[in-house]
Image 1 (cartoon, one colour):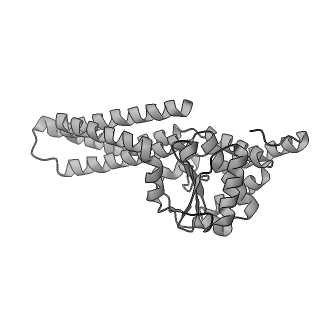
Image 2 (image 1 turned 90 degrees about the vertical axis):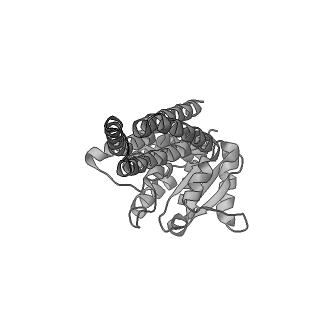
Amino acid sequence: MLNTIKTTVLLALLTALLVVVGRSLGGNAGMMLAFGLAIVMNMGSWWFSDRIVLAMYGAKEVTAGEAPKLHAMVAELADRAGLPMPKVYVVPGAMPNAFATGRDPAHAAVAVTEGILQIMPIDELRGVLAHELAHVKNRDTLISAVAAVAAGAISMLANWAQWALIFGGGRSDENERGGVLGGLATILLAPFVATVIQLAISRSREYAADDYAARLIGDGRPLARALRRLEVGVHAVPNQVQPATAHMFIVSPLTGGGFLSLFRTHPSTGERVARLEALTAELDKSGQRFVG
C-alpha cells in the first residue's frame, strides 16, 4: 500500500514538473502539450514500465528448456516465498548484475545478465535471486520501474530544453526571456531532480530485501559473498547501465565517494555485508530459519 502511494505521488510530481517546464518553454501551448505528454507517460509508466525497462536492455525471456538451472532456482525460491512463478529474462552483456520488475507479483519478472551467469557460483546466484524475489514480495518493483521511467523523462526534459533554447526564436522579448530562463533552469536542475526521484525509493529497501533473502534461504553468507563479487565485477567492465535505471540493480554500477555518496541509490556494499553477517550469526545462534 505504501509503495502504491509513493508511486501515485511520484507520477503526480512528474506531471506537475512536465506542465511547469512546458509552460516556461512554450507558454500555454507548451503547457497543454506537456500535460498531454504527462497523461500518456503516466499511463504508460503504470502499465508498461517493466516492459520499457526490459526493452531498454534488450532482455530476452528464457524458458525452462533454455535455462533449466536458472528456472529451477527461481521456481524453488518463488515457491518458498509463496509467490507466483515470475518470468525469467537474460540481459546481454558482460556486466554482472540482476534486477526484478513488474507492477505486482502476478506480473513480475526477474532478469539476470549474461555476466552474472558467467562468474557467479550457484549458491551465490541463489542468494541474488532470493534478493530479487524479496523485491517482488515487498512490492518494490512497480515503484522502481516507474522511477526509472520518470528519471528518464527528466533527462528528456533537459534535452527538450536545450533544443528549445536553440530554436526558440521568433517570440517576443518577454516570452523569449522566460523561455531562456525556463530552459536553463531545466537543464541545470534536471540531473538533480532525477537523482532525488531515485532516492525517494529509499536505500532501506535494499536492506529489507537482503534480510528477507537471507531468511528465505536460511543463510546470509551466500548473498554476502555475491555482493562482494558483484561490487568488483560491475566496475571491472565498461558501464552498461543507464543512470536512470541504476537504482533497480542489486549492486549499483555507478561510482561516487565523499559528498557524492549522499546521492547514492544503494547503501554501501560493506554495510550490506556487515548486516548480512550479523543476521547470519543470529540465525546460527537461534536456529531460526525462514519465516514467510
